[in-house]
Structure formats: C-alpha cells, structure tokens
Image (cartoon, rainbow over all chains, first blue to last red; front, side, top):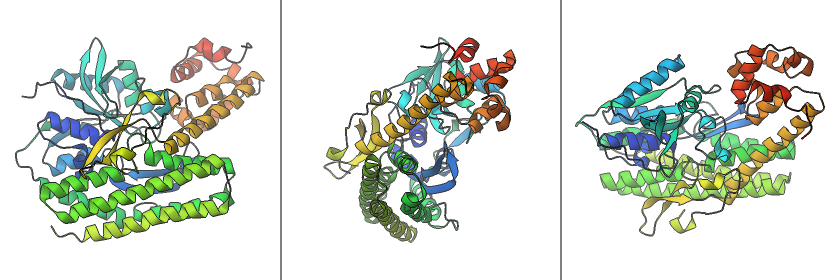
Amino acid sequence: MNDHPFIHLQHAHCESGVTSNLLRHEGIDISEPMAFGIGAGLFFGHLPLLKINGVPGTTYRIWPGAIFKRVAERLNVKIHAERFRDQGKAMQALDDVLATGKPVGILGSVFYLPYLPEAFRFHFNAHNLVAYGKQNNEYLISDPIMEGVTRIAPEDLVKCRFAKGAPEPKGFMYYVTGTSKDMNMAKAIEQGIKQTCFFMLAPPIPWFGNKAIFLLADRIKAYPKKLPPRKAALYLGNVIRMQEEIGTGGAGFRYLYAAFLQEAGQLLKRDDLLAYSAQLTKIGDDWRNFAYSAARIMKERTSDIVSYDELSELLKICGRQELELFQNMRKLAW
Amino acid sequence: MNVNEVPQDPRNIKQGDTLKKVVYAVGQDGKYTGVNSAGWEAENFALKQAWDDIDETLAETEKKVRDGQWSPIPYFMQKNLMDVALLARYIGKWQWQVKRHFRPEVFKKLNTGTLDQYARIFNITRDELINFGKQAH
C-alpha cells in the first residue's frame, strides 16, 4: 500500500512537522502551517507558580499531543496512539509497527537525543519525532527540526521515550492506520480557527489565553521590585527562549499561524483570512521587538524600573492587538 | 518579518551552531515560506545566559564536593540539568532521601545497588561517581 520510502522534510515545529510528514507519507498533502492551524496549535499561557528549574513556565503553543490528534480527527484520518507502562513492551510495539513499513510518531525528551547539539538538550519532554525504520540495531529517525535524517541507538531511544518529569511521555507513540477520501479541508480549517479563537478568548482564568499575556506583562513590570537582577534576567531569558528558540518558527508560533491563515485564505479564496494573516505578521514583528528589548535589558543587567515598565508596555501592545484580532476572527462567517 | 530580515547571527554555544532551524518569513511575492536561520542575537543571548547560569552553579557545587561539604550526587545531578524533584523521580525515592544522600557521611554508607542506580541515571560508572572530587586534577 505505502511501501514507498519515508520522505523527511525539515520544519519549524516538531509536532506540526511530524503531523505533516506522517500524513504526506499517506498521500495527504498538508503543509506544516496547515497542520498547525487545523490542529489549533496557537496559544498563550503563563504560570508564575509552576516553576521549571526555578523559572516560571511560559508557553506559546497548545499542550503536546493535541495537534496530531485534532488534525487526524478533522481530516478523517484513523490513527492509533498508545502509552506504555513497560519499556520492553513499548520498544517491541514500535519494532512491530516499523516491521510493517509504517513510520511511527514518537513523543520523548530532547535531553536523551544525542544527535542534537548540547545547546538544546534540556529536560523538555514533549518533543516529537518519527522513527521510520530499523537497521543494524539502530533506529532511523526523522526529526522535523533537523535538516536531514539521523539514527539513534535503542538504549538512547528508550531513555527518550521514558523520560521522567513533567509531562512524562510514557512511551507514547502514534501512527496512521487509515485515511478516507471523505476529507473536507474547508471544514477542518473552520474548526481549527474557531477552536483557536475559543482558547485565546474564552478561558475564565488568568493563566491561559489572551489574558495571560497581560498577566505576564504585569509580572514583568514587578520584576525589578521583587527579584534580584540575576533572577529577573533568567526569568526574562526563559520567556525569550520559549518564544524564539528552535521549534517556534519565530515570534512564538505567530508567524507559523500567519502562514496558516495565508494558505487557508488562498485555498478558500477568502480575502478576510489573508488580511488577518498580514495583521498577525505585524503582531509577530511586535513580539520580536519585545524579545529584542528584553534581551537588551538582560545584557545590561539593569534594574532600571523605567525599562521594565517599557517592556511590560511592549507586551501589552501584543496582547491588545491579538485580542482585537481573535475577537474579529471569532465573528468570521463560514 | 521578511525573508531578507531573517537573522543569521552565529550561535557559538555548545555546538548550537551545527543546527540551522526553520523560521517562517514573508518573501518578495508576499507569500510565507520557511527559511533556515543560524540564530538570532536576542535568543542566542537568552540561551547563553541559561547555560552560563548552569555552568556557574555547577562550578560552585564542584568546589563544595572537593571541599568535602557535599557528596558527588548534587554535582552529577546538576551536570545532568536535574533538580532534586526530577532526580527523585528517576531514582524512585523521596526528595528528602535524595537530599540526605548529598551529605558525604550518608553517601559513604550507600549500598552498591543504590550507587549503581545513581550511576546509571547519570550515565557514568560507579567508580566515576564515588571517586569524583577525591583527587586533585
């Protein structure tokens, strides 16, 4: 059926990249931005009390695993997804599927991936990659953030799949079991956009969605009063890294989502989506402006209250513009 | 961001320059496209700062191990970018137990099974674990 070789394409973000590569293998031509948008990957969250290595958590994307699942649902693709308690069983299950020639999506920690440069190997447990074969007792790996394919030893892959900490991947793996001709792209795009508007606007709690941008802005304003300079710089640095490091496509996934809106607008011949795409591109530039200014403050190790005030204001500009954008997009007629 | 504005600032941190990631940018025709980027000054600085903090803390811990104030456990814990909570999850013990193992007199009495468990988590041999900080370099 699909015994053709797996084609690796490099992408910005791991999960939407894996989703795109796995579906393309099944003959569904879906770009990374399209996967990201249909899977409603865009988000914002700030959790001052959930400290990871002593730094408050910030996220620009939806929780791991959601994108692939939603894209599959919305495009009528049948998938199998499984978690394991037993490491041996998890590796056996992977081998069994690979033996049938099917590429498998894998969730794991970047810390245990020796093929990545040390610079990026933190205990981040929500990385996605594809195993597409086994040769000479090594797994053939297509990691969407890498330029080319690579290999990994079984003992490293076990550690990666069974990393501890939050969230624990527990050997999670997923693959496509069947596709359907009955695939409505327009409907899938609509569902994806509606869901993103809902997640950005609806949460009644301050830590998630658009509100959380303002929460972070208020926190940043208070950093020079509340934190020693070194800590304030580390906190700010983490926000920049979540926004700009590998996997985000730039501006905390905002450019990736703008690319989705553009592609959707072209496909559905809708000027309103194209206009929202252009608007989000500008907002993305403002996010980059915020990151640039934050880095400057960190470099100077300044506790200058004025500069933190300005930084907080830059962030609020992003928050206000996104609020307007998603409020308008929510009203889109379909 | 336009394609010609995609930053290519070298990232000279722990082999970080060997990977050119993809970012999305707008081309001359107004269409979005994926572009490889070597890195960006702002994020490079944030990444370097995070590593510098880790390296500084690790150097302080190494000194405490060599001075006999701490066992080698906290050194290898930090070297593996773990905190007590994460190490406790890996070794399957309570955090207070792991913290007790930071004390050299407690560490000395650990049985080989526990030491091997720690060594495996840290990806080193039992000897490397026990002997760390004993001899001067």
